[in-house]
Image (cartoon, rainbow, N blue to C red; front, side, top):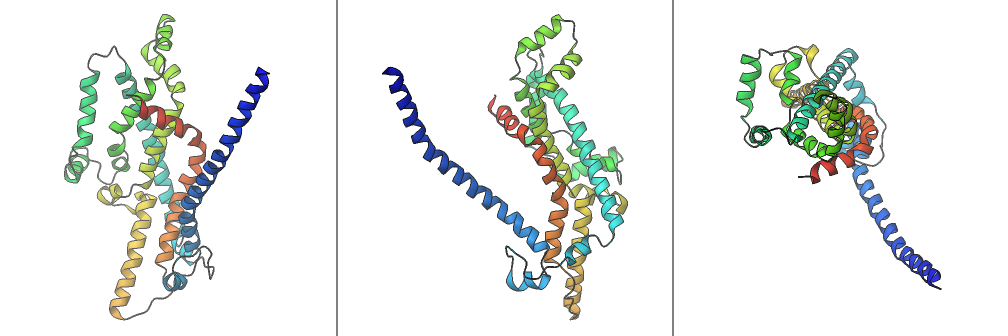
Length: 303
């Protein structure tokens, strides 16, 4: 009789939890739809005629299908390809260097046998609260480092982040100390312990920080505006920004002179720019998604 009673209790619990599970999936589905609809409207807006956007606004399906905005974006394909190369170079180089130095700093700050780890942590934390601003950064990059019109001016300023170091430190602190102790007994030095043990065990944290850093480098355009003069070194974001500014400038000049320019897309051009710039990141995210949630939760919860 007792086993039968136990089975009945389990069945009752399942019956109680099933409606909650259904409600949970419905809520998650609605949230996913709410998040997807704006992106879908951007895609449709980029494929719509400029006159439809101005007259009717954004819709879930194009009234008149048009590729004028994409034709304008890729009017000079060589410039877009070159800008893609620059953005990819900046993103991969900056992300790699950022992860390399951030993980080493996190590994050192995680070590309990490092006497000055609290002082170093404060040294890293203090500048993240009080930033010097644009003018000191410009003087440092241009005058003292001599990186004017140099691709490294887009990589070095954003390479180290105190928040990323602390997140990785908290993530590495979750790794048992016995692993390090056993490795030392086997004769491994600190660098071998770091590269062969802690880095493979920190894949979730590395994927999380790598995604944050890559997004920051990919979406950055203000650095190019400050430090880059050569058009061949423009990243994709700044190139499209400058093209959009030129389009808006032509529209304003035409409106001031009383000349109509109906074939010059502006609103749809913005939508096409968004699709061109966010496409690679959307393709990258599914590969790091399984590490992302684990890395951000573990690294943020530990003190």
